Length: 278
Image (tube, rainbow, N blue to C red; front, side, top):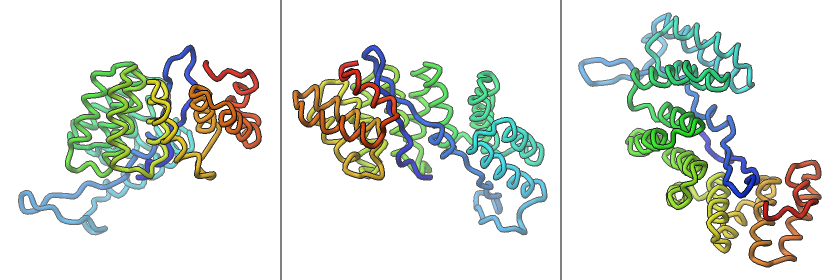
């Protein structure tokens, strides 16, 4: 699972912090792994083709199709495949995790929440489910519940990518207006994975909102130094930081880059209006 560059920033409206995770963050948490069967008590063996039942094989194929359709935004078709996967193997948490993501995208909150809860019943230590459910709750402004799930996922020894969990938690804390906590969480994520531009940009945005412009500049500069990674939002953030620091020439330079590289972006429209402080 690659968590790099999954976060898109949009200029906060009316001075409020608005940091959005793209659907890619959730789709990165979709897995089609097959659980290992237990043998001789607690000993687990590696699954090979001969170990899998016909139902397990059918479920695996359906899950691969469902994940592909989900990634293309074909939610109804993805849901059909998930339903078939659950019929073939009703005890896989991955299927209910993806079911929750699909229903969340379709706006069916009751079924989305039921799906995530069922996934955790089947596998209470599944950090992908914890993270997806946590971010879902964050979008519903249920911040304490979301934070509890993020903390559980980070503490789980089997978490394969704790930096991604911390990134999601930090974004959620920022959405809830908890900027000091968001800064601390994103710093932890950055320490674990300093090469992740998503973390650097979100940390820069939080520091900017807190008035710590020098440090905000440091983190966003690391992203804008990579032409293949920099985008309209990161250039606009850099321009706003320089404007707040009173560096008119530097702010204009970033504004010029923005107009030249992303002429049709929303951020270029803000430059045209001189809306650095919005």
